[in-house]
Length: 362
Image (cartoon, rainbow, N blue to C red):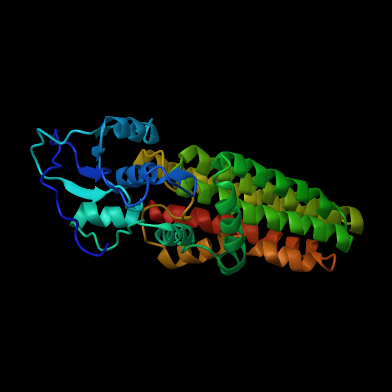
């Protein structure tokens, strides 16, 4: 769909508050068709709402079809469904019901009347293209190198298959966290085989940890609670792994300094998590008063006074370090990473506090 949508004069809203009319009278494909966990119509309505259309009207072919449309969008407020187009006063934007629900393209339509980015799902080929578009949009700009080229393709592969199973994002977060925590005790041993098992579980946790956000974005179930649960789960896994590395190295060497490194890494990781939430995430939550959207995006707040340092900290906070743990574990040397974490984690904490202090200076 490359041209700006024509406004059908027979489909004007009964109330001026209606922002968008979805024409479901003669769709090329059934609006009830499922696509990655949602019907096409429900996906379109949710995406339109997220794009800024507050009031929506769905024009059905007849009363029976209207009843079916109401079922497809049940639970979504401020959506009118009817088979009547009479007594409509103004001229809203009208799009066909076989339009793919994508927030960015619908936002362009809402803000500028630009319909060039809209995709019509007219047949099976169009449905496959739509699926590819939605899955491709799951890749984040903030993904590290290994996350982008290794973890993300696997997590998207998994998400694509479980999105229709009814698995919720929060359930996936808990599964991922439990897998990561189950891997931590293997680092109590200095045996390469056991450390490798622990590292594989650690990597599996990292890969599956991407699925909760992917499921949430695919089905429009992002929430602050889910984001915070994900943030806490990640950090609990890191703390457990660092703690077990320190204790295992201490038991194997019978000297206290590995224990000190473990304590330092745990304090640095826990302190950084608390600082990032307390100084940046909580501030954003209070400022935005929003129940949706990502929780963790940057270690900095809204300001940009420490842009270069913030970018460095953001890069360091990504999870690519997990693959170094795996490489060292193959040789039974996972604890070597603890030497880096025991020194680096407290430094990271101090830098986060410094950035937060600079951002809050008058």
